[in-house]
Length: 244
Image 1 (cartoon, rainbow, N blue to C red):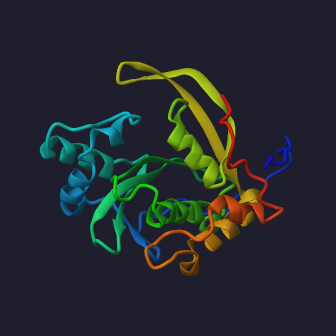
Image 2: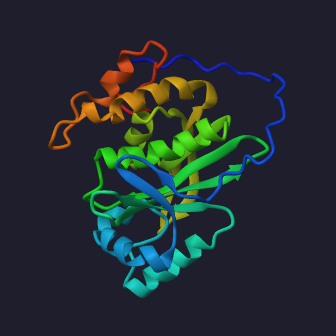
């Protein structure tokens, strides 16, 4: 499915309401609870969740030599003034199984970024993982009324690029030679989801996450791409070759 073209605009923008900075508070879903990162509570679970080195391949940090090093990193994340880190806590296991953050938050522009995302292997490709990200998307574009939510990743990180498209983000381009990560060049792929695209994305996510879309074993009945294809307003590229 081809995505409709976005139009360039220099139209006036009404001042955004005061108090639109995201609050670092728990966000509840049906499968997960997003809890503000607390190393004292979450370090043990998260250290175990991140035991597989492959989890850290595309991130600026990790893997960690031991729990002490990991906890020191968590403390730096929790103390960040620029990013709001959340532990993704599964209701079923009652354990923290991954992390995500809101960063590059600019309330006056109505812009934020969703990043620092990693999941335990057991959480990957589950409804709980999708819901965790959907909750943050809803918080920024729905509750706060922001104009734009960004997603950036290593251009070679195909799973992250597919995830962005699946969730409704649109590819905007690549920043070549953008940074050096772990001694290697990183070209960065940029994606965004705009306020006017949020209603159709919300409908698709709500339908996919509905309990009746999953059988007793937790297997989806309909794919998110199929649900989105039923909505003529949701013309998002969800399959096919990724842009380069």
